Image 1 (spheres, protein in one colour):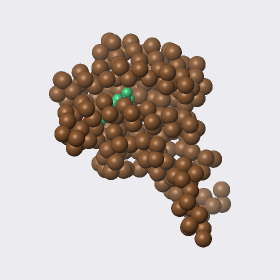
Image 2: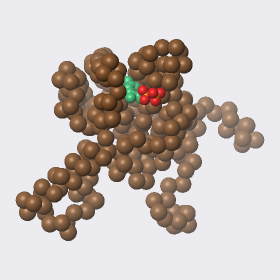
Image 3: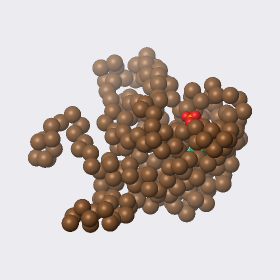
Image 4: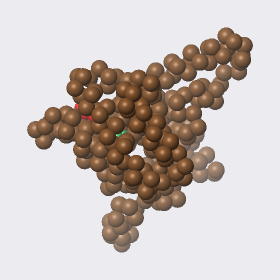
Length: 256
Ligand code: FPP
């Protein structure tokens, strides 16, 4: 009887709204393969990926997710063919300026992490403009990881801390996890509770390596341009079935 009742619920109704992950991170993968399947160039897939970005951001904001971090361009992506890099940068500029209304309508605050100075100046300017325009929105934070690599981020943090030690501002004994976190781009954001990767690849590709120590991973074969509301709901339903133990035993969690 109960099973019949459950299957009659829509995916959205199956979500426990009191246990929505506070921070979701997404590795948006599979644009190139999706384009090839349509007999098109890779860039066609990136263009269609924008719809998935919009739908995912709107759905997360609607559910009450606090932070959504999207891996939009990695440090390694600079090695792609120049035409693809140029097209991606142009798409970023167009999307950021074209989606301001979506951000405002959904009360989303835009943020960015990564080596932002390495972005072309028009992309950098558009990004700063959108960050300023949306800064008073009180809803979800949408964090774009651009020219981002976790190893780069950690190396930068280590250099800054070493410099602080050299200048006598802190002693080596005082270095702890909090100090390291203070030097990461994600300083001020909670760690992701759920990381979604599309296109079925079983890896984390240099994304938020420090921050995902206890993150639940959800990998779907769906290619990014086909990702949307229902796929997000499935990921959250799956997340809500997990037992998050943080190194403790099941019994300890029950007592708490
Ligand atoms: C990975 O697919 C996707 C990217 C490197 C770029 C993601 C960009 C977008 C979705 C467009 C705009 C985004 C924003 C946030 C405005 P892939 O090219 O590696 O696919 P493949 O593995 O099938 O080759």
